[in-house]
Amino acid sequence: MNFLFFVALVQCLLISALRLLDNFVKISQVRKFIWITIFLIFLGGIFLKGCGSDIEKSILENLLPQEIDGWKAKRMDKVYNQETIFDYIDGAGEVYRSYNFRRLLVRRYSKKGKPEIVADLFDMATSRDAYGVFTHDLEGEDAEIGQGSTYKGGLLSFWKDRFFVSLYAEEETEEAREAVFALGRKVASSIKNKGEKPEIISLFPQDKLDKKSIRYFHNHMILNYHFFVADENILLLDQESEVAMGTYREKNEKINLLIIRYLEAKKASEAYKNFTDIFLPDALESGLVQTEDSKWTATKLKNEFIIIIFNALSDSYAKKIIESVERKMENRKTVDKRDKQ
Amino acid sequence: MKKKVLTRRDFLRVTAVTPFAGMVVLKGKPGQEIKAETKAKVVLIRDKNALVSFKKPNPDVIQRMLDDGITKLLGEKDPVKAWKKLVRPSDIVGIKSNVWSYIPTTREVEQALKRRIMDTGVLEENIGIDDRGVRGNQIFEKATVLINARPARTHHWSGMGGCIKNYIMFVPSPPAYHGDSCADLATIWKDYNLKEKTKLNILLMLTPLFHGIGPHHYSKKYVWEYNGILVGQDPVAVDATGVRVLQAKRRQFFGEERPLQPPAKHIFLADTKHHLGVSHPDKIELIKLGWKEGILI
Image (spheres, rainbow over the protein chains, first blue to last red):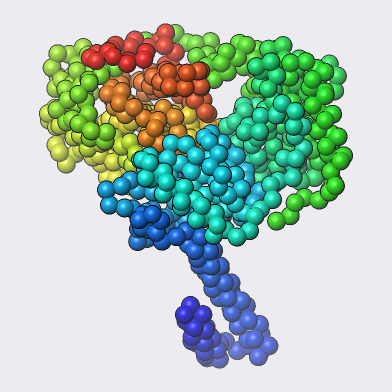
């Protein structure tokens, strides 16, 4: 229908444009052809963009069922993008923007006398970012849905392929909980593909790693949300950088490992210099310092990567972890390949 | 002069991080002494019967709580006389509310405030109640007095949603203030000429949210009936007291020290950096009225 309307519209506009040109402008047939071609490309662009949006919306709509356990979808879904997300969720909108989300579809389900269920389906564009936004909040029990999930307080969240899904019962009753889980399983089965986790995650040494502490993100705002480093972006992080953060437990202490991958080695080198100048100006040897709480911070630049360990209980432990990450880097089969999705 | 970057190590220099967020809460920016400004008065009023049901405050009890709070705050026996210290009959008054669906300011609170403002002689047509529409609202654009009333809750991006943050709707682009966990929200009060106009800050702690989850940062599991209202003229002191209640509840609920994530640094920078008010408990005279059970602070 859209297409037929578009063809008719173009025909009308084309005829009008030709008449206008003939009547008012004395130009050659060649120029006339060029102007009309530009005009059509412009219109086509608008049309295709509109179609693209509709198709993307339709993909999201089809992943959510119309009914689950007697809860029926309310009449109108709502769709949000990077600009309109704050109309729906205020501060938390920054989180999804930080992960480059493309589109959010919201569908509410109701059942008479029961709490409403809100389904938020995020198209994150890549599985890396779907995984990443999932790691932003890992509190809760594993619900074994999708490629990673948590459930707590009426909220089920999971990721699969390039999608992050949040299903929330406005009041947690046994029936609502079952419906939320049933809805989760249904949505997960509707998403046919599986996505890859970011390759950088595989660089964590596994010994004493708290697996529920792993976060994946891009920018300075999210870094500071989880672990305050500095009020300024001294690691020169941006939407192109990949950051993996994990916590190790040693003698009841938390040791934080940060692995950052920049788009280019040159950028990594600049960031390393900036970080060491500001954070470690008193380092006794390159990239190693005992901080004011008697713990150790160590850092290492390796190609496009920076590895940083905070709060190590000894300098030897800090070095050991860094060496372990370096070994994993060397052992990678695809050293220079970024996981393209 | 180049701006000094504040790093994690600056905090470590001041204290051995016990806990890190606590340092942010109590000390402010390292190297800056806490200025001995005027002690701010904050009144905490609680009533066991403040709520009819979870989202439905009892209007009569709310009116009495607000009356008690403002009379104590301003040292008057009669609530109308107390209000007359804040509002003149010729004033145009905007009541800045909050419509967040899970825990709104509520009509009962709005109407209790409006009633007393009208009692001072302000015409009804000169009183506006709004949240997201304050920009473009004729009353708010002409307002000579603002009354700031909203519920307390943890906030995904700023640590806590309180009185300081409630004014973000006065700016054309709220995301412009999202940097560094909304650290500089207090600048709104000066940039938009709101500090002088605001005569009263009311932080509702009837059903506060002490922990948030998911995109909506809400679960009924993490709200409780505290049945309290904080009233003060200093928005920083009011918010800082609210944070103490939320922190205490988190400690009680989780059985361990669980600082707000992210820390509500905007409240404490509102004191140490922007000098909007005071945040340190030593600089706040906290008066507690009413129901004491489960008061937490």
